[in-house]
Image (cartoon, rainbow, N blue to C red; front, side):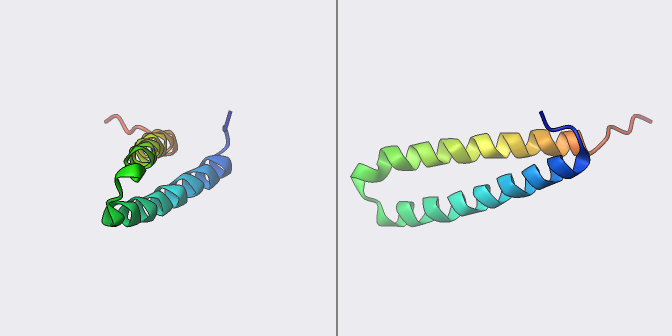
Amino acid sequence: MLTDRDSLLRKLHELRSEHRDLDTVIARLADQAIASDQLHLQRLKKRKLMLKDEVSWLESRLIPDNIA
Protein backbone atom coordinates (compact mmCIF):
# COMPACT_ATOMS: atom_id res chain seq x y z
CA MET A 1 0.00 0.00 0.00
CA LEU A 2 1.12 3.57 0.51
CA THR A 3 4.45 3.70 2.28
CA ASP A 4 6.30 6.91 1.57
CA ARG A 5 5.33 10.23 3.09
CA ASP A 6 4.66 12.01 -0.22
CA SER A 7 2.18 9.35 -1.29
CA LEU A 8 0.41 9.56 2.06
CA LEU A 9 0.21 13.33 1.87
CA ARG A 10 -1.11 13.21 -1.69
CA LYS A 11 -3.77 10.66 -0.72
CA LEU A 12 -4.69 12.70 2.35
CA HIS A 13 -5.19 15.79 0.19
CA GLU A 14 -7.41 13.84 -2.24
CA LEU A 15 -9.54 12.46 0.58
CA ARG A 16 -9.97 15.84 2.23
CA SER A 17 -11.00 17.34 -1.11
CA GLU A 18 -13.58 14.62 -1.72
CA HIS A 19 -14.85 15.06 1.85
CA ARG A 20 -15.38 18.80 1.25
CA ASP A 21 -17.10 18.12 -2.07
CA LEU A 22 -19.45 15.64 -0.42
CA ASP A 23 -20.22 18.19 2.27
CA THR A 24 -21.39 20.61 -0.42
CA VAL A 25 -23.48 18.00 -2.24
CA ILE A 26 -25.07 16.79 0.99
CA ALA A 27 -25.99 20.34 2.00
CA ARG A 28 -27.64 20.97 -1.38
CA LEU A 29 -29.60 17.74 -1.26
CA ALA A 30 -30.69 18.38 2.31
CA ASP A 31 -31.97 21.83 1.32
CA GLN A 32 -34.08 20.34 -1.47
CA ALA A 33 -35.63 17.80 0.92
CA ILE A 34 -36.93 15.54 -1.85
CA ALA A 35 -38.11 12.25 -0.38
CA SER A 36 -36.78 10.21 -3.29
CA ASP A 37 -33.26 11.49 -2.62
CA GLN A 38 -33.17 10.29 1.00
CA LEU A 39 -31.49 7.01 0.15
CA HIS A 40 -28.94 8.81 -2.00
CA LEU A 41 -28.37 11.31 0.80
CA GLN A 42 -27.81 8.51 3.32
CA ARG A 43 -25.27 6.86 1.01
CA LEU A 44 -23.40 10.13 0.58
CA LYS A 45 -23.30 10.65 4.34
CA LYS A 46 -21.98 7.13 4.83
CA ARG A 47 -19.28 7.74 2.21
CA LYS A 48 -18.39 11.00 3.97
CA LEU A 49 -17.97 9.18 7.29
CA MET A 50 -15.79 6.55 5.64
CA LEU A 51 -13.63 9.31 4.18
CA LYS A 52 -13.34 10.93 7.61
CA ASP A 53 -12.14 7.63 9.08
CA GLU A 54 -9.63 7.19 6.29
CA VAL A 55 -8.35 10.76 6.75
CA SER A 56 -7.92 10.13 10.47
CA TRP A 57 -6.03 6.92 9.77
CA LEU A 58 -3.69 8.64 7.31
CA GLU A 59 -3.09 11.51 9.71
CA SER A 60 -2.17 9.05 12.43
CA ARG A 61 0.33 7.42 10.05
CA LEU A 62 1.89 10.79 9.22
CA ILE A 63 2.14 12.09 12.78
CA PRO A 64 4.58 10.01 14.79
CA ASP A 65 3.74 9.04 18.35
CA ASN A 66 5.83 11.01 20.84
CA ILE A 67 5.96 8.94 23.96
CA ALA A 68 7.68 10.92 26.68
